[in-house]
Length: 307
Image 1 (tube, rainbow, N blue to C red):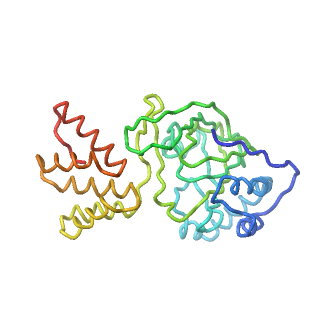
Image 2 (image 1 turned 90 degrees about the vertical axis):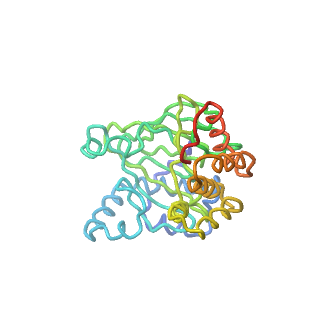
Image 3 (image 1 turned 90 degrees about the horizontal axis):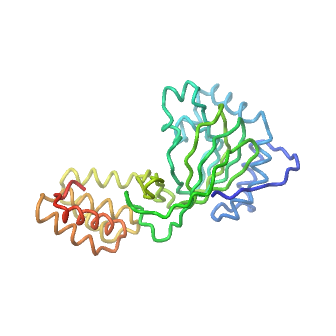
């Protein structure tokens, strides 16, 4: 379960620039759990400021949301409170109730309600407004997990709690899983996300908690999509690059993408079978897992599908 943080209830209150100044200073190190936890008193002090978020939203509206359009990579559920840096992200997230118009129009999945998932980054969160969303919490040990769709994972249910106003939690990357439930009324949380070089390769998963498996990887790096596009155009240079990436790329996710793209480019039959058999002994855990699954299907009389 995410770590419960209980900062001093000293009544201290700050504005957003004060939090930004502190995060830019030497006392903040979001690269480790304890360094991120050290921001708890400052984030709690900002959460006591009942005016700053409304003032921030009004300023954005007057500027036709120029700040958000320029640097916000998230959905409309999220307001960036400061341009992202290479160390951290400050944001506010909105959590609608089932009866709210946006929920009726978009459905619960747009807000990841009822979707068990983890996160590819550590983050600190505090309930700012409203009753907050509730979550059913699970955890797992990421050691030895390749991250393939359908891969069994030992999930441990640890309970349910609610992110009420002032409650603060620290989520651990690829460790804490939650299935969020809609807030009883519109709620807002404030977040400090850890961001680091290579963050784009960190994977986030959706889980099937009934079967105890990874249901799907929820993140894809843009480089993976570009490689699939290039190989799909059937150029020799792209195939050569895919072979190089499949064998030597430092990120397992890219090696797996390259291996799949090569397999899709091969004609059905023996060429694909040989590709899968080689993959069963590959150094990439993702490639080995995918190859083993396909080989099991072959033994059951199924043909090799598109990868």
